Structures are given as structure tokens and as C-alpha cells.
Length: 435
Image 1 (cartoon, rainbow, N blue to C red):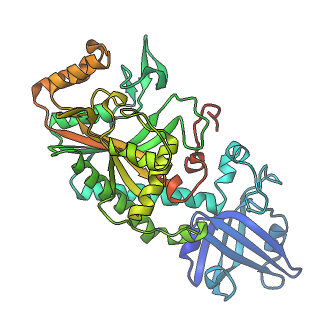
Image 2 (image 1 turned 60 degrees about the vertical axis):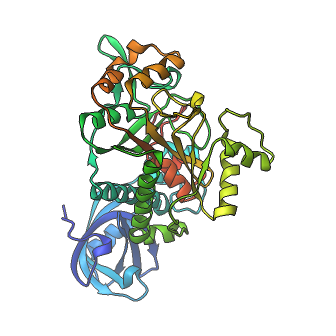
């Protein structure tokens, strides 16, 4: 087997061996052109009768799109070729033949509906536009990690299997764990909090979360990835907002600087938002919504339509696509959030909205043991069930908080993708568990 020496993006004049998929075969009689694609781009292979060996001509005649091949040859300057270079082959080796035609068109000339594309996801990912989404996603995560590590955060790995549901049992996936029942986590937050009590100060966790919601909307996945951040010794929830802003700015800058080709391919531009992001608080949010004809009962949570209304309001007033919503009604939030002592109806709970869609939730957690127990009783929770978590708050817990940022949703909104499943390599939804 020919050993690859260069990726297509690395080609310079001289000897080289590349490997990849035959993307296009063009036959002009005495000359055949092969466009070969690998993970970095494309290269032109020119096969001219009388210039190359007859064996190479015969191999070229047998090639179909998406055959996997290796080509050894001389890289020469060619003005009209990709990157201004082409390969004159001295050897071609067929590594794998592809059945023709493919079950879906990956050239972009024929549209397939999303379900069909996801059925054939591996082939769909051969489309440069589809692959670009995940190259951008990777740089987003890289930018987040660089920012957090630079600011002293320690990457940790918290359990995906839980012995009890952290929030609502109706939204968790039960799994068989030897002779008892366990649950796939909804969010690694509780273990992050325990790490702060352990003395780690600043941590982040990148990994999957699961929600057993039978949702068929373009915004929901049953399995999604998130960056979860937690830190101690905060003054209040505004500290968390500043941290989240810095993480998002770092991610956007990374994408803007290192994904120019992918952004151009998708026709997108990245603008870096000004900080601090605008902040809207309850109960004033009810007045804003009322101005737009949306009536939400005082003390209640808002709905999906309200998120869009608030975004339009912020966009018009502040010129920002990002904004925070703070001080949610406590009754709609989990037991572990911190209430405002002087106004206990409201919680130090924060959502980040981007282009009318929630990207993250977070805020300040309650660190006082007596308050946690009181709030659990108010939520009619069994104290013993959560003792594995709450008991550690008896032994010195600093003020702390954090957030959990959805990776797929961020990419969906950033690139104006209509369905979050396109931002997941192999999405998991109520009706989809394969491939």
C-alpha cells in the first residue's frame, strides 16, 4: 500500500503521495481529471495519454466517485487547479471500491430531507458544508478549553450514572445497574458542586447529558453535549455571568480566527459581541412582555414565545443577540438554587439567551445546609434520597455557582441552522437511536 506523505492542503511542488476519496471524474478524451478529497480539501490529478503509464490510464478508467485511492506522483504548478497545483501520477492504488450510486446525493445538487440524511449520516458527513459544522464546533470547544485553562480552571470528569434523579424523575433515562436501577445524568452539576466543597475552587466538565423528553421540536435532543463550569467564592450570580461571557468571547474569537474557510463555505461571518451582555430581571420581565402583548402571570415562568420576544426587545434596545435573564421565580427552579434572602420569591438563577433561544442555565447555588434542607422540604422532596449530596454542606461549603452551556445549541444558533440535529454528529431523539 502506498504510504501517504501529504494531505491535500499541504501540497507543494515535488514528489508526494496523497490518499482520499475520488470526488469527481472528468473524461475529456485524451485527458482525465480526478478530483480527490481528503479531510483537509481537494487536489486535482491529471492523467494525460502519452504522459502517464498505460496501467494508470486503465486504473483511471475503472474509477467511480467515492472510490478510495492513493496517488503517488509529481506535484506541479497549474493555474486553474485547486491551490494552483496538480498531481501527475506515477502510481495509483485502489484501496476500496464504492457501490454506485450512493443512497443519497452528497454533491449538493439534489436535496434530501433531514431524516434521510441522518439515516445515511456517514455519507452526509462527506458534504463539505456538513463537515464544516463540526470543524467549527471543534474549534468552539477548543476556544472554551483554552479560556478556562488560562483562567485556572481544572478539567474534571464527573459520573454519567446517577444513583438518584437530580431534578425531575420524569425526564431521566433509567438504566439497569447490576441488581438495581440507576439513571443517566441530566447535568453533572451536583458533582461539580461537591468538588467545590472538596476545595477544587474552579472546575469544568465537558461531556454528554441526557433528557428523556419526548420532544420532537427542532431545538431538542435526548443526548446533548455541554460545557459545565463551577467555581467557588463568588460574590453573587453576576460573577458567573462575567465568566460565561469570557468563555463565549473566547469561543467566538477562536472560530473567527481559525475557521475562515468553513465560515466562507457556509456563508457566515462572526462578530464579537460587546460585554457585558444586557441583563433582564424578573419581575420587570413581565412588564417588557406585556409591552409586546404577551401576558404572563406574575410569579410564573415564561414560555418559548417569550424568549423570542425578549430577544427582539434586547436586539432593538441594546443591539445584542446575547443577553442574560436573571432572578427567575424560585418555585419553577430546583431546590439547590439560591434565593434572594430579602425577596425569597425570586432566585439567583440565570439563563443565557442567544438569538431567541436558551443556551445555558446557571446561577448561584445555595451553600447553607439549613437553607438547602428547607428548600427541599418546600419542594416536597425526601431528604434522605439526596443525603449523598446534601450532607457535605454541613462541613464547610463556600459560596459557589456556575453554568452549563449547550454545545449543539450554540452551534445551531451561531450558524443559523434550522434543526439542532444537524449540529450533532449522530443525533439521539425520541424516534432515532441509529446509526
